[in-house]
Length: 420
Ligand code: HEM
Image (cartoon, rainbow, N blue to C red):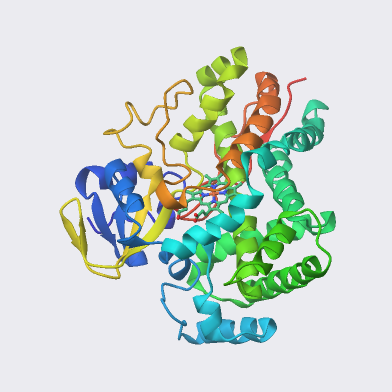
């Protein structure tokens, strides 16, 4: 079964046949390319995510951002990266590696970090963004409505979440393009071809730029707060007995930048792509726009924007009869669990009226996505405005290309044009 490697670039365009083979023949399978155990069935994925005491989220940092190393990466590249970043940030390597990161924390530490964000992310606060989101969508759709060539990804799916997360954080408009560039670089280097040359110069330059920018911004919000999310995070720390360090606040903000951006882009891109390739489903939602929310949930199930999350075992354990040692990396394959025939009937069928509740597109358990309602709101606004335009468009190119990443799944571009 060693050829079954969901992380290989051969899987980028279509990982689903490999997932099916894994579920059927090797539901808990060791992939040497990432030194990781792949868990592919719905129940087993849920088991991993339901038991954070056994399956630690530390792997979300060590495997993705620290080259699989649990401490300081002692490769030459790792040391060079540490020296450059740490010089810039005036901190010690140990402090950097040990810093608290929401998505990579466990237990009480994790609860308290979620608490910080919960205060700025209540449903009421998110809903207050609805009219701004709809305005951005309307502005972005103007060229399509005017008959100009239009790329659903570049002209709508990318700028919408970038604008919204940047405005939420209080970033000035001139930096929005940098924002996208920084978050693309993190995805490319942590989960794509950039892993072949970890901590390469161009990545280090970007990290310096990004950390430098946020360091200044956070300091500025400390001295003159505004009503944005960064100011709230900074202010919440003044009364905290164990406040986040400046580096930890920067990493918090970088997580929001990447998590809030790339994923929503891919939900809008994957959903549009699925509709255009399933004309019957497009017809149904055109006839009944009330189906938009269930179409969004079906997209999250059918073609999940985040395909996998990682954990590592804090003790020796067993999944579905397979023994795993302490310290093993585990990939909970969300994209596969969502296509598990044991959980969803006819799972490879894209059906916008199916009851796809229970899909794992936003994860499950303690680390369930904190931006789910914001992502759903943006997707609903985008699709409610875009779908009526899809009734009369030229057919998109037959071949589309997917982003080269084993973690996020999305298309690179989707050009369409109104028929005259
Ligand atoms: C379609 C869009 C999105 C998808 C598919 C998605 C998916 C996910 C998934 C699968 C996780 C679980 C990670 C784990 O278990 O290790 C997660 C966590 C998280 N997401 Fe999202 N996300 C989306 C949008 C957003 C947005 C818009 C934000 C914020 C602006 C956001 C912020 C977060 C945060 C902060 C966490 C960490 C929660 C924790 O560790 O407790 N996400 N997301």
